[in-house]
Image 1 (tube, each protein chain N blue to C red):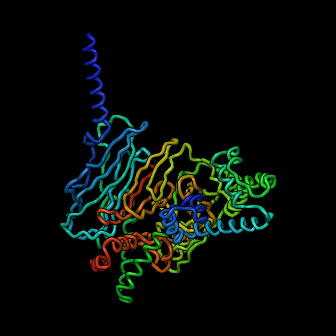
Image 2: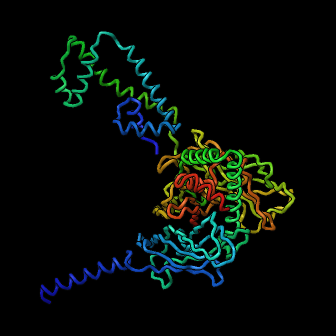
Image 3: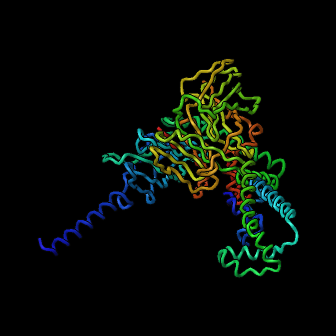
Length: 375
Length: 190
């Protein structure tokens, strides 16, 4: 082979390698996304834009950057209040499963609406014939609180709680408007925005607790519970092992003080730091299925988890106090209880309060009044 | 985000430029933690002032300061050339070492006071090294496995509130800036 031919071969190989790199791992190749809605779904896909979605190999994994806008249509005869989509790249891989929910919707029959999916998922970097990621419907909640969907993620309960909270908060703001007028509502929104701005930002890491013995500096710290008189569940005691910025293995004992059998409950978990700042760390909850807590009966729930808190990466936050409150209860007949607003109004603003305050901030009082009148 | 300790110290000493001073003053107005830091720094300054009053009289402090500045810029040898002592040379030379050492001591004392007020928190042991770790914060949701970290969600919406749900999922909620919808995203460890 002549020198010229050899150079030509090297050049051709380089071009092929470069194009392979681009086609295989960048945005040029149309990614194999699949949207899988059941035939009788009350929501149908009108169009999907995947333009900003990317795939990129990293180590032994393929990172899927999904940034898509789905255009969906309400094909049912009822108004849609909430929607949850399950996004799967690989169910058995950590980081391969996620869900996206939109709540406080008001989608009329026949109306088309957007759903933004913004996620990064992982899957093994192995050749596969199937799609890189699948989007499927986990559930739709209607305005009469009926539900459609496979409910693999228990989204029926989650969306019902969000909808009930949203109705509670809208009712509250309507009552403020009726009692104090637009200026009173404006003040409420400004207070909510101030609370959101003042909320301390923390990072939390969670992993399954592997350690079974306590370390030397670890001490048990008792929960203080918010008293909510009408709560069907009464927290009796709660404790977590604390070492510096780490909380391990929280346990909460509760008693069913209602006259109905309880099948699920969640305890909101608030952490206090050295400066007295409080933030919502998460929740301790009952098993997703199989629990039947009879009236008057007691039980204990625990999380086999280790949590670490920091104000920013590398700056641990010392845990000096913990507060718990009953945030939701589901009865065996499917009915759901949520706390009233006055019991928890000093905590983190609810999702609906956050949404309405955001609307007020961006579009003003008139837009907020219109929104409250829609429901 | 809070300003750094050094920025706050410069702010307390009115040694920042206009825009930086304006930016930090806006933050301090809203932030109790930084207000407390400033009060502590003011306390340290008062303490330093009190110590200065106990120093011997009869020393020309302006010239001493000028000499220190010169020493910093040109080195000790050059400082000996540019100093213009009005006091007897022997007296000035006697105070040179304390003058150089005392700022270092003051910084050490101030650091000791601040550390005694806010002792550093010892991070808990790195028990997660070989586990799947889910992370949630204002910047989004992430996952770490075998020491490698991935950001799984960095929502563009403002006011992102992240929390942990049980031991295997993290949740992030935010208002989508394009649609105005309240979005809730979960990422699962399994």
